Length: 418
Image (cartoon, rainbow, N blue to C red):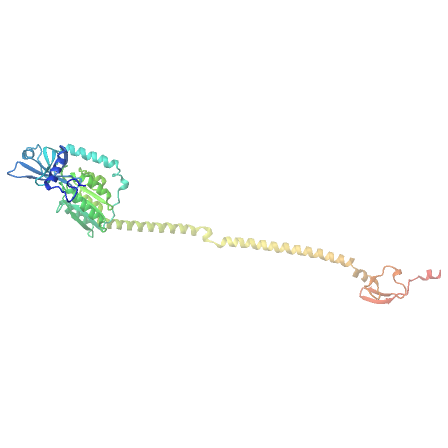
């Protein structure tokens, strides 16, 4: 199977064939309106054709334009590098050189009103996305060690910032990136410098500085690409563009807006003399506060010491000691009285027991007679019948006991004669 021409090394297109086909495809695009910035304008003396390089301010892209010389020379607004224009032309591919160009038949310069309207539309867009939210603002360090500075080469803004910052804090250091600050090449160079400083770990804060100028001069600082790059930075960014009335969009997305480059230096670098004066004042205030506190505490201690509880701390103990002594004496007296009463009661009970006991009875002349059997315990003799003749008896008297033998029942003499 034979492949179509250009689809195999055996059947290639000639150069002219590719050029003609590309020209045909591009020709089908028709005429278009294109907007951009003039990056380079060339008017050759002996040529009726003007050559223009038109670039996209938001991207590193450009294209070549050709137009009649009179279209540039007789334009109502002077065409120079950096002018924002809208052109109408037809894309053309030149087969002889193999180059692409846009053949322009109409050029319109974008006026100030249109530029401001576009900036306002971009401002509303960025605001709707939340890029102006104060919560996204990164705090600027109190004393930055190294300041990244993006500004024009040998510009007044660079001189002012470095002079003021060094005068306020001599130890501060700078990492300077000089770029174009107006025109078609400003945005790419500023973005590149911003990325480099943001990646530098020694840089604590980045200052974007430029002196005042017209709306066209400050147009790069309202560019969408630059604004979004500022938001993406992890290092705090300070915008010091123009003078007080100037307000490009980078002021709104930056972490801190300074009215002028000099104001930026004052706001990010503390003043040595002012800080020393503040330290001195704080030391004086702290010393005075400490003295006042000591005086208050001394007065409080004096008041506490003057109170009876601390002035005579033993008074309460002595008063309690007397009360305790009285209570102890009363307790001893009551106990002694109770013991005496109980002793008397016990004596009376002992006397009664003594009186009622067998010993007292024996002392009055009575005796206790017990039978003493040959075995077993002795028993009290309660009847004469229990002591027949020959019964051994033990007679207990007050001072002891005697043994006796019963002779039988005792019969009185009168009763025995009967």
